[in-house]
Amino acid sequence: MKLFSTIISYILHPLFIPLGGTVAYFLITPKYTPLEIQSASILPIFILTVIIPIITFFILRNLGLVESLSLHTIQERKYPLYIHASILLLILYKVIPNNYVSELYFYFTGLLGATIACILLLFFNFKVSLHTVGVSGLLMYLINLSIHFEINLIIAISFFILATGSIITARLALKAHTGIEVIIGLLIGLLSQLLTVRFWL
Image (tube, rainbow, N blue to C red; front, side):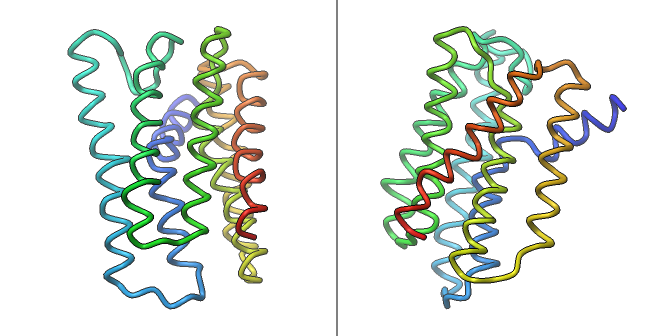
C-alpha cells in the first residue's frame, strides 16, 4: 500500500496540474486552435510550471530551506508556494494574453486563487493537502468544460473522480496529512474552479 501511495503521489503531483489542465483544454475544445497557438501556450506553461519549479526545488534544498518534494512542514511550503503564485501570475499576464483563451485564463485564475488560499492557511499553521487541491481542481475544470462545450466527458470525469479518491487515500495512507487537511484541500480545489466558472461558462 505504501508503494502504491507513493507512486500515485508522484503521478498526481501538484506540479503537473497546470500543464494537465492546459493539455486537457486543447484536447477537448471543439474550437479550431492552430498548432502554433497550442505550442505557444503549452510549451511556456510546461517550462514555467514544471521545469522552473524543479530547478527551484534543488536550489531551495541546497540552501536548506526544503528537504523533499513532499514539503512536509509548514515552513518548507512557504517559499515554493510563493514562487508558484508568482509563476501563475506571470502566466496570466504574459503567456495566456498572447493567445487569449478565456477558459484557460480563468482556469489559471482559479489555480492562483487556490494557491493564495493555501498560503493564507499557512499563517494559521494549517497545512493543506496540495495534491488534493490540484487533482480536485482539475476534476472540477473538466466538469466545467463538459458543460461549457456540451461534450460528454463522462470517462475523463470518472477517471478523475477515481484519481481524487486515490490521492486522498494515498496521502492519508502515507500519513502525510490528516483527514481535515485533505477535506479542506478538496474544498479549495473544487471551489477555486467553481467560483471562476461564472465568468466564462
